[in-house]
Image (tube, rainbow over all chains, first blue to last red; front, side, top):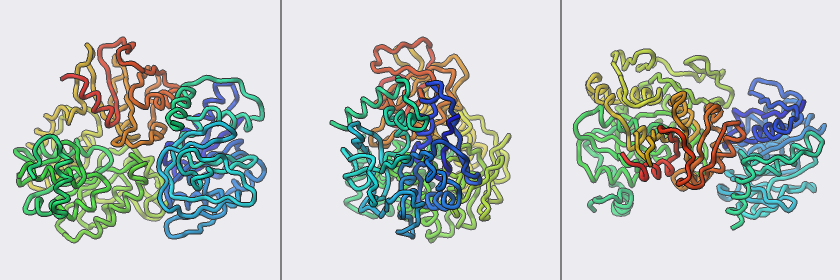
Length: 225
Length: 381
């Protein structure tokens, strides 16, 4: 059984972030992969899972989510190789420090050498990044500027929008994918969702056509024009 | 400046340049009721206008920022004024119009690319209301929405209204301490002590009670949310001395508000037009759909007035529509189709309106703002 676990959607789920869990789950289910989608609430312990999903959130909820995760088994599970997809605030939480109202260096989980400072202005708009030669399309809405160090690779290079710093977006470690494209980024980018799913189940996947194929083509056309 | 013609907002913008405090001087000496919140602003304001009876100045075109307010206040000079106010403009409008009553309906995620974060809006409301210097202001607030309660609790004389509020996804984490809010039945509380305010003065249950008076409400418009809107409107009207039974009778006679809930004709079909702009609005509208015998069309745009980011489609519980086939229209029909596909809802993408493979005579059409206006324009009464 492959378990996909959405972490604290009450805190981190501002911009349709539930779409990510739904997309991975559905693309697995249609391939007859034995899969379940669960979510962890504020008072729940973090359960064992193959893939954890972190969404975006406002300052207060982001701070609380970081505190809850810090004292949970999440960090050790990720260090042991559990897969993670983190977007927006989730991306910041996994890093060393991030900014929230009243604190410019709030402690993150330190799972990735990434530091987020306050950007000069809010980054709001379409985001397109090139990831291994393919376009990743979505929408960003955040106030952070993220700097990677210690040899951490970005997920992609920015084609349109801002991402981490107008040049790079997100980060990629052996078991973590992170991007500023929030919400349904996995739903909109079927190739990316399948790449993650293939890694999580440790097998090549059968091709799958879905409504997202046409949407992805359309967004690529719009965002690269 | 005359404010004539259809260019409501344009006229208003000119006005704002001529005199920044124009709203203040135009509103002075008038009895003003303001209405704000994510959903129900236009409908509730219309209910207040109708319920008040006689001539009431209002921004019925939905221009709900300063420019629209100036235009409305110039175009008609009635002593009685009901204005809907964009959530982000509430603080400014409070100080400029000096209202007798402000109605706070609800707060939930909506156009996040423009307004950013809903908790931040609640914080701004709270600060504005706390700082407001007129002790005579009556705040009529929805006690079942924790974000609204957070905004309005600083005033001792807030009139709390108990109306069914089903959308709680944006109030699962406490606006005060961020811990989890427990929503139990018709109540809510947080471990930090923040809880549903008491006492509630108006209650919409099996019967409607406005500040101790039982009122008969038999709305022509559908939906529990419209009964909630009417409850808020009647509570506000009660506070400016309007007879409740007469007001309720006038409100019950409203059939549609700027086309919303109206029944239109299009190429031989009967269209029931429903405006839904955000997740909570969609959830409420989908709950009004008849079980069968209607085809469901949904039209989604992502233009300026809609917000450019349609990510919110994933926050809409479209799974409620399983068992129906949904026709996808609008600029962002592929975003909608993808959402429905992942939600295992049967769908058809309509690229060309001339080739709608429709089979039923009656259609329920849910659309967000600009898509709704498109369909209102292309259909007939």
